[in-house]
Amino acid sequence: MGEILATLCELKNQGRRLVGCFPLYPPLELLHSFGLTPVTLWGLSSEVTDLTKSDRHLQNYTCHVARCLTEFVLGDAHALLDALFMYNACDTLRNLPEIIEEGLKEEGARLLPMFRLHVPAVAKERTGVRAYLKDRITSMVCDLEEFTGRPFSPETFLASIDLYRIQRELCAEIEDAACRGTVPFPTFVRILQLAHFLPVEAHIELLDAEIPEEDDLPPHDLRHPGVMVSGILPPPRQLIETMEASGLRVVANDIASLKRSLGYNPAPTADPGEYYCDFYLNHYPCSTLLASSDRRIETIRRAVHDSSAEGLIFFGEKFCEYEYFEFPHLGGMLRAQGTQTLFLELTGQTGEGLDAPRNRMEAFAEMLKGQAGS
Ligand code: SF4
Image (cartoon, rainbow, N blue to C red; front, top):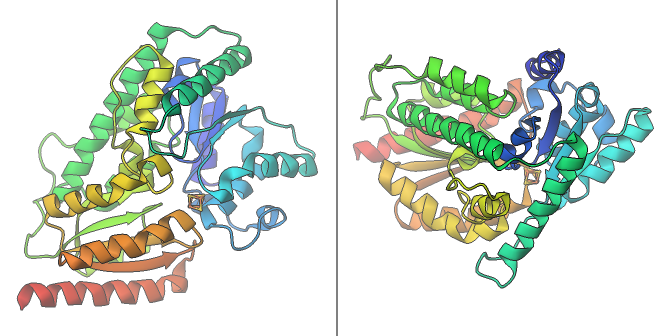
């Protein structure tokens, strides 16, 4: 049994009601305030050894993220979940709830209640955007009241907001340490990925335990080239090892399951509609949140500048149209300002399948070192 499935089993044995959420930015505070435990079903490739069930329902040109998610839910996970939550993002995900439902029927499994939210995919200044989103949130609150049999509580919602605020602040702290080099980058990645599967209270305890009071390690050697990393998921362990062995230091990150997930704390309010308008419309920009995508170029340009990154490594999730549409423009903008870029395409490959990206990363590191020495 994989580590994530074992964690879900343990949570279930504690009597928790688990809501499997996708994609990466669900309304965690709201679900938590109803006594539910949200788990974000993302980055599951380590749990999935084959894609047999998923392949019966999804084309093989679907991204690896969605294929693993589908396999995971149709496999052992559905028996542990009490419900699913999804909001709209890319075309791949748009009908995934129905596909999963049909898959569960085919497996003869219990069907899972589904909560849905539609996040407007237009600029936040457009007329009606806020009113529409608030209306969708109100409707979801009603669905949750019916599902849990308890009324919405403004006090409990505020308490949940406070917990997630603490979690995001601690995540920012450990990210800062990782970018300085005083926490190893692989440790930072592992701990932040656990945010998606651990109850928020347990994750806060973990962060408290892992953030060193004093620096464990000396800061980065500034003679090594600094890079920013981007993509939907962090790179696999072998690529992180190659990055470190090649003498690259990660000085900024824009990974969707790390920085983009945990990079924005909305102002507290007891009104869920107001809170999630702020959350979704002012979110750390992500290619999958269309309303925010115009702000991405400037956000990345500023992060590269502020961190003095000499290069950007983009770990592209094969078949992710949103990320792939953006990168040519983003890469062009960065190269025009003298920042080198490397685009690596990943699709869940392991072992020798990673040899080509490892070689390209080593060559990129050599090029950055040569540039620094010239
Ligand atoms: S990785 Fe891209 S294509 Fe795949 S589910 Fe996420 S947004 Fe959609």
